[in-house]
Amino acid sequence: MLDGSSPHRLVGKFFTNSTPPSNAETEETLRNQWVPSGDMTVQKRDDDDTFLFEFIQKTDKDKILKKRPYNVNGVHMVIKDLNSSDSIDFTWDSFVVVVVGLPSYLCNHDFLPTLKYRVGHNKAVFCGTHNNNRFIFFQVDIDLKKPLRPGFYLGRNQNRFVEFKYWNLGDFCYNCGMVGHVKGDCVHVKFPKQRALNDTSRTHVYGPWLRHSFIETSCQINLMRLPNDVGECEKSLSYPQFFIEVEFKILSVCDTITESAIRPISRFRFPCSYLYAEPESTDCVTTSKAYKVIRKEIYEKTPSSLLGCFKHMPDVTESLVEELKLIKKDKFSCDDKWLTLKLQIILQYPSTHVDHETLLSIFRERSIERNISNLINKRVENNENLLSLSSWQDQIREVISEMGFTRYMHHSYVSRRADKARMESIQLEISSSRCSVPADRSAVSELERFKVLGPDMDRLEPCVICTEEMFLAEEATIMHCCSHVFHSSCIEKWFHVGHICPLCGFKLPLQK
Image (cartoon, rainbow, N blue to C red; front, side, top):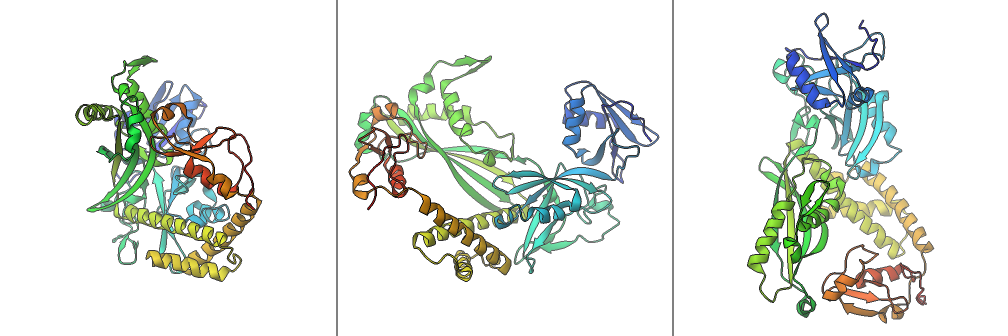
């Protein structure tokens, strides 16, 4: 039994069948991982191969316990609170387990108890979700004497596998799934276990895909000139400026196979004078006007769900400013006032074949969900019978079949999704009936429309419906009564379901 007289002590022990790292290597690695705010002392006890860690600050101890597990160059170290009990079991450790690839129709509170049991029986604590339920997090106490759980199958035909990933997982055996040794030292299993990867191929159950960590990514930018479609409106501009459309392209590379997802982020205009403005100093940091504006438009408007998984997201702002200077010098003529550019930020990261297949499954399911949502809206608009479960099942099978994703046509998925679609359609119909009556079409058609010109961009507020600015040559609509201005396409959609100005509440005549 260890002496636990100090309240700010932790005890650690390597869980391994091989030679553990040296004392100096262990201390240096853990100091770099923990970065304590106060002093920390480390003592190796030779009688039982444990390490004692003592902290000045209680917050350091609590932080370290919260962020378990840890490893030193891949060798797993179990960290425990010295005051937790008289006897300490170093064959159990706390892990963050991430569930990946759970179908969206099961991402609900009803399925949560089943999911918790799958992850860790009664020892799993739900911690939250990330990226639209793509990642579901649990804190789990895991028995290191048993193989890691790789995931579980869904459906009677077991044609859908939901993966488990382990945060900060060090070395483990790709044959048997045990922590404490690697494949070459395994005495438990001679050949690796296998499972179905997709309809045509199989994969090992255990492999590097069980690790969850920030994605190391490479980044490049493409700045492409687009044709100007503003016509004579360009003559209304009093100073030259860029119009930039920002787009992220995510490339997942597995061997020679590459899958991409493109996400439009924002549009903004950028006066060329910003490129040559005097640098501004704030909090001992000197930055140019161009740098501040571009960084805000790119990084502050990018969803955290897109960038949150990438480690050390590169800052491309400086190189982009320099490229814009070259374009201004080489591409702008004396008469040019408006140059349209597309900024494509390409993030590329390596992927295992298992993670690649999981990513494809997520893409396929999201495509199916979009089409089912369109089906729900269409049936509500057409006043179809929304109560028939069999008709929902037939139409959802038809949607999946048309997309070629027959793997998702199994009964459990179609049945659950049809029941959910029926409930969503009924709720949509009820909410639609409670909406205010649409505006009279003739009254909407009589509203004044105009092309946005140069001076308008400087004086007009952003459209409150879509929250975007009014850009050159776009069509805007002004309300006669209150002088509020919106994008024409936005306010027309607004008056399809209501008759009140979104800013001041002025009422248009009702549709008869």
